[in-house]
Length: 577
Image (cartoon, rainbow, N blue to C red):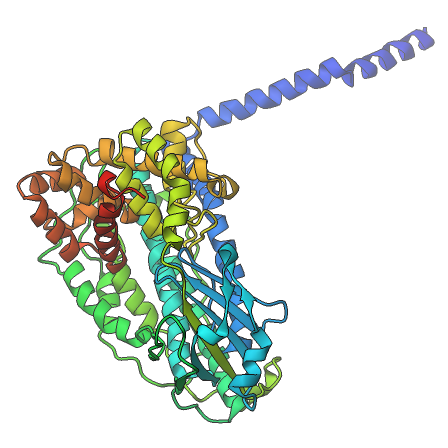
């Protein structure tokens, strides 16, 4: 009997730990979890959805952050060696030799090629010429220094060069902030179910984070230049002397020696930004929020932005560098933060001006910081450059390769082929491997997470950004860019009645988004394109063009509209390639 009882107990224990019992236990646990979820408040459910969307968008944007970090490292190495960081962009190809002493630059916008050699200050121009001899350029072009215009510049880590590198960061930040404008507008218009308030808040936070990062990046650049100047001579260097001289006259044309084009110092950008900001955030011009189903609206100025605007009036002064840096605040959005009436789309020009005045530069680094610099003390160097003009038919040859694609996709999407060609001309100079510092990719400079994702979702039924590798494929890139023009023309800007007026707006929107086009026409700076369309329809095409050139929020977009609209004439049937 006792043996029987023990057997029963053993069987019971085996049953307890059997797979079926464990499965039942898991089922009960899942039921308990489902019950707990059902008991959650609506605010908890909303917050979970917001967190999920925020995480997805963060994943899409990580590529930009990684790219910027890699770019800064590359620029730092070039500044250390050359005194400046000339790198490739969408219309310029820059290539360095394996030892980083020879640089080839092809400027496709100006149709020129420049080969520069980095040498000791004692090396003569004749000796430098032997170092490059006949360099081979892209497209099978041979570079002959005997036909070149020659210039020479000392590597002295000047304030002028420092300002250029800081300006590069400002311009890149402005372009990336513009992408957040486009992204927010796209999310609102797509009716994804994401709360409008979340989109406003997230775009605001992301743009402010970019500004904080830009300030840190500029501080790093300033410290690098200051350390190099002090290592080189112990005191700030004078401005570089762009001493240029010519060799024997080229057989084809007499060289005209001019000083190298230099960008305006970053400090000058502050004054201009302050003026533009005053117009953008003037309380009399900023209307109350408009609650509509889709458009993003400019909200009343907050105290924080008014404070930021006030800072733009403060001149940049020489003062000791700040050694402690504040960490960038998290851009995560809590549901309690979402207050539409308190939000305002960050004015890019205002933000850039604030970044500039809050990263002062100085010629006086503490001695211990200079001593702690790991870089070896620089030896006096100079750069000797040889510049030639490229054959006039270079652009036409590249254009002819992609015109059949433009014609095919234009017919498919009912878009003017001359517009597609003019955009390729302006965006990449018909270079399929072009990459900007946003970054955008390929012939029509597609940003994967904005225009790329828009086309993926609306045309290909793929709810994800495009892959960088795909955008380097000319057929895919031209299809995507042309389809995006179709979306702008037939969806976002479809209420504009006049074809020419809509064309001007489409060109501008391709660069900056339909929302920023609307801001150029709405007196309260709203991004409501429906309201803007009413104003546009009351104007002639010439008036629309003038209004865009006058009121678009970014100078880059104004210049883009001028270039593309004028270049369309080059690709009309009567001017066939």
